[in-house]
Length: 111
Length: 115
Image (cartoon, rainbow over all chains, first blue to last red; front, side, top):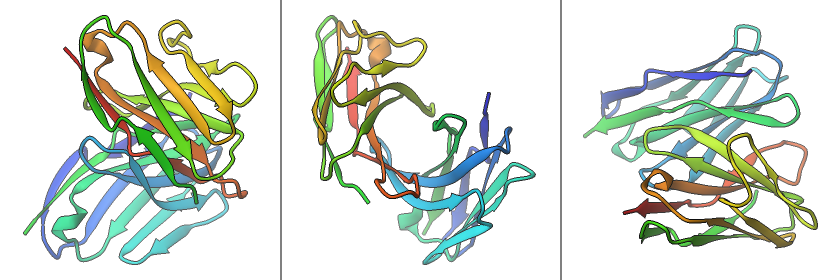
């Protein structure tokens, strides 16, 4: 069974610092890994999708890396802003198009 | 990409009542997914809704409690029946991108509180 863990569960950083969020998964046989942002009480917004053959994806201040063999992905957010405060979830697609989610990294960026 | 609209965005319900959540997608998709997110938890798949056939439910979820309709390729509903406080959650509708990327898109979620 695929299990996804996100560390740390919660963190606070001062504005301007870089954010580093970690996601690990137990079964390296994945099709892709996707990072999402979730604001309180809301749905999920897709941030980045990394296919299993890719090492990283970038969008603006966001960069996500994937090391499939070690079962890890890292989301970097450069020069954090208060608007980046949210919960960030990672999810892997595996098996028969199954999806496994982590519990999220809850981020607070302090002005 | 896909744009997904969900209604209602939130509701407060009485114990024993039922509520139907609607999900509208801006493009035709074969499968639509319904998830539940309990407070402080991650997402759990309830069922996959296929157009023209019965929904496929995950272990621990049954049709009597969570009936689903899928009348066409852009619309689905999820009903939460005979609600109890334990059903207080965010319910999310989701689809995969029609291209080969497999990217997943979500609606805004429906936040239900059962008193």
